[in-house]
Amino acid sequence: MKIIRRIIFIIALLVFIGSAGYLGLHYFEGQQTENAFRQLTVDGGHDLAALHEQNPDIVGWIKIDDTRVDYPVMWTPDNPEFYLRRNFQKEDSVAGTPFLDAASTMPGSSNWLIYGHNMKNGTMFHDTLKYEDKAFYDGHKTIHFDTLEGEGLYEIVAVCYTQIYEENAQVFKYYQYASIVDEASFDAYVQGVKALSIYDTGVTPVWGDQLITLSTCEYSVEDGRFIIVARKVQ
Image (cartoon, rainbow, N blue to C red; front, side):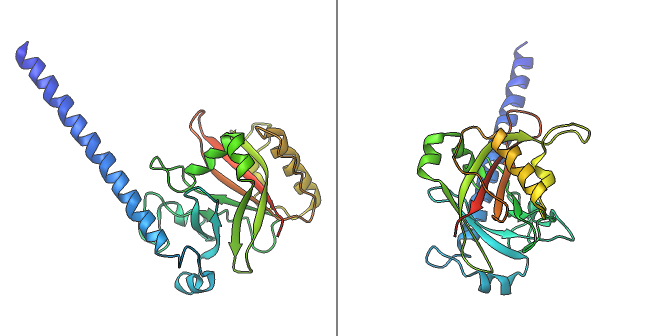
């Protein structure tokens, strides 16, 4: 029995060491990734024109004050998830880089759907979940999304829990509105996200407004998602 207990102890110890090593490596890689993104900024800001010369896939820069959301946004319509696991330099990266849905043409679509990972180390779009707390929303009602055309300030319309549904499910699916080019679709999307919103922001977009939707994973349900919808105000 002593031998069996020792074997079990050794196995448990090896599992613990392996798990700790994996977590340590994960957080180290995450910090390395963050440092690489910070090198893209100059005095806390960014020069999109210069970054576009380095990598023409960049279409914008997303930032939320008092969070770690401060990243370039990429777009590769011919290979939609290219940046799912790649950094700005197109190197392999667990965290990836926020990217625009292939259908969200710029210009063209009245809604730009931006995906980002919910990383356990608090990076990428993890901090968007701070908006679960209305008190945080009350102090952070706007999002910055600058594009190659200029700076953009967006006020938040809705904050929602949702998920990726089965194809035949007869429910509102936010991800089917990555391209909005007509008033009927715009109104349907606004109605859908306002109905899902966990609190009332008092903001209702009208046709002609430009929207952005930030989407990240949320783990309380299978294929859960957490989204924030905002409209451009300047």
